[in-house]
Image 1 (cartoon, rainbow, N blue to C red):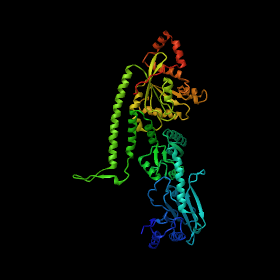
Image 2 (image 1 turned 180 degrees about the vertical axis):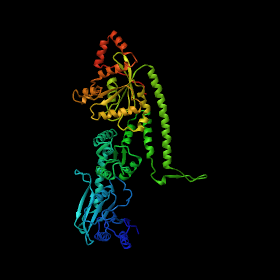
Image 3 (image 1 turned 90 degrees about the vertical axis):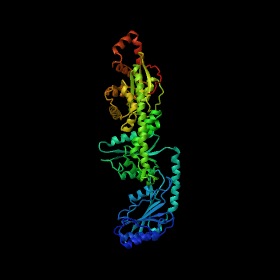
Image 4 (image 1 turned 120 degrees about the vertical axis):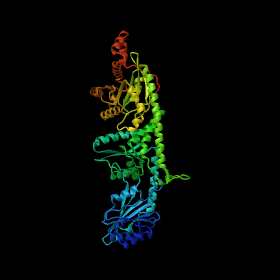
Length: 580
């Protein structure tokens, strides 16, 4: 005979024997519970002053008998769900309530998280007989946002709900809704923001808006977003178990396939959240890495992204099953050999080492090409800035190029160099680099260090800022922080406030004046002439060419006409340089 589960400590042998006999009982497959089983449960519950519950399968057989305390019932592990995201568990929970209360939050949570066919609570009267029956089942997605439907019967004899037919009908509805959702072929995500010590709600909501843009860039459909404020992050779930249950219930209601956290989860947190939700779990770092993997086009970029992904993956490799162990055998075998987990980790370490060597070799090649370029005596302009600030659009506007420019984060990853001719027949090399973002993963910065070394040889950095974004002060600070980590804090740079066409007239110019920058619009080409003039002054006043000599030479050869060209912003079409 099967064992009784749960809080059995202190029960009399006769009570345990009565509970074990419950496994012999059977319920019609269409009935929630029979009057005989209901009376048996309420009598034992009244005698023990504890909640008693049974899990019934669709045949009506008792699969588990559970004992709780006077207020709640702890369900055992019911195993893996049936195949298919639209399928229910195939089990219904029938248990007793001692204080005449309806279904509790725990009952509803078990119903939704475990995808039970039904949950029913039988009130225990003072005489030990069954009273009212409260029951609930899941419902398909609806305009009211309801997750389940609660119903009530005055007694066990008045229960009319078809447990089996209702469960099968629900599965058909869920399958139809799932098929409709899958027509787009995109992941459906719920975003979870986190704030706490040192991070206000405004900061958390601002970061969550940026996470929405990251999700859109990655091709993920955002269906909901939420923020929780905590003094300290929960070491197990980051946001706390109660909030996580709310997120899971919402994900089931909206048929989400992934939960994205606006923080970097530790390997332990990611594992525990995945186990508690049975959904795909991503954090901010992994989402950025996925975007980089989608956007990398050159062989160099793909190597750098792969290295960052492997460094992120390595501490998160965990064993899934003891059966994956490999035992050494044959002559000379000395016991257990490497497990599959150890083999996977060794392979990842070897791949990381190989990638680091290849990227180091690429760095040497880049350095050689930069040296050859510098031998020509051409100044170098490097465009840096926050992602989606309009760097590629600015490069296109300055050089009449056709570099990919989209209204997405990290639209371009690979550095692009063009030759730009100034009106006085002077040339510079202008380079567009990968965009920066707050909390850029350190492994990603290290992986792209060979690419970002381009900035060390730059004579002037054009720090492009999205003037239309209310968060531009934080974005400027994030870029400056990354530049400092690369040892470029002393590099001469010019703030370029882009997208001023999106601001009211005069506001962009006032902002640039306050921040000692220059206002431009790469789309309308407003302000490009002033930008070129400032770059001309800054570059040739730094000693490559004496600016006074240039002015004298320009005056002797018709400098007025050339200044007119500069004022009108007329540029010579560029030609593609070798990307380095």
